[in-house]
Amino acid sequence: MKKILAAIFAALMTTSAIAQQDPHYSHFMFNPVSYNPAYCGAEGAINGVLVYRNQWMGMEGAPKTANLCVDAPVRFAGVQGGVGAVITSDNIGFEKNFNAKLAYAHHIQAGTGVLSIGVDAGLFNKNIEGDWQFPDQHEAIFEGKSRKMIFDLGAGIYYNIKGLTVGFSSTHLAEPKLDFSEDGETYLARHYYFAGSYNINLPNTLFDLTPSIILMSDGKTMQTDININVLYNKKAWGGVTYRNSDALTLLAGLTIMSDIKVGIAYEIGISKLSKSSSGSMEFVLGYSFMPERNKPAQKVRSVRFL
Image: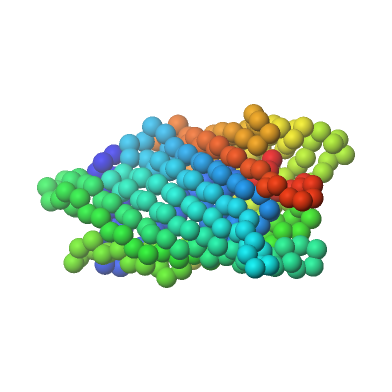
């Protein structure tokens, strides 16, 4: 397995760089600030979401990702907006990636809905800790450790009207380069995201239905996740997600207190890679509450408040 991962990495670290794939999440509907800063504070609530993902279990060097997103509404000099922070640790093989960024969003009343425009900025750090060898050779790809830190930018827009949310965003806007040696370099490819969701009130008031979709592309390939979640009695939910030609995911969660929510997802691989792993697991812990206001808080209709 080490030789396989080493060969893959060698292909990536050529003079002609290949795109760097962002992490993806089964619970993409819970941590939208990670890929679109325009979501910051847009729904008027203070949110904290922690996601941990163990991908392709049973495979040596498989990805393990932890993501923390915090956002809150702000108002200054009569201007409504939101602020947020995102911390991501993404490890695969002998790569250790760490990303920390701050975000701001400006909110505009647009008809009966809210339009939000956001930007984020931060640092991306990549560590290479490998002494693995090419298959059937003795020359190591890297000796010891190599580390690079770069400045990173992202931007996005978001619109929310009567339970319908639509967002478009891009990460790694400047496509910053990572030079590790005279003979090899890579870069963070610009990624594009489209995400949407809609809350449906069913005739039986104990149930709510929320379909969601996210499309992610680096300009060369596209990944599409289509999800349907059913909320029961405002406390428990279950759902299923289909990722094109890759996985079928089962999700379930529960509100254990009025503001605290926990969830779990299990991905069943349907690609050729599934023969080498026992699936993927992901966990989410969320905390959301409406700040005190002079008037009663309005009910928030959002997938993040399942």
